Length: 184
Image (cartoon, rainbow, N blue to C red; front, top):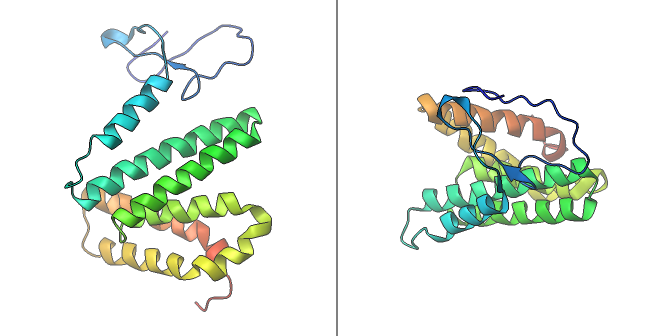
């Protein structure tokens, strides 16, 4: 059964079944009906084409956004692999996400969202044992992204303000890793 905002299903399905990036997706049709399933690799192929279709003359913010969205997709794939217990594929997806965020940051070095996502993925990849070194290596980055978002929030409104507050919340959560040894 599907409605305008939700889908429910009562069925016993054998494992493995993943509805999302690693399995299949179904379109929700007007009136709430469900369309035919299609493999989600098609979504990933569309995402790659969307990224590659951006002309080299495109503004840096547009390039960073597309690279960042590619990173976000890879991160979610990693999360799904983690749930399935496939550590090798999880790590591969997280490394790919980190690289997309790094490229986005190279495209737009003052984009607070991609900088926060890059720092987040570095923390995930470092694991508990490697996180102490991150404060030494990237602590100034944490301070920088926090300052950039505070500057932008002082004049932001609407959607930009909401994104800024989201980044600020993420950065504050990352402070336990990146702020170690810094003065308040």
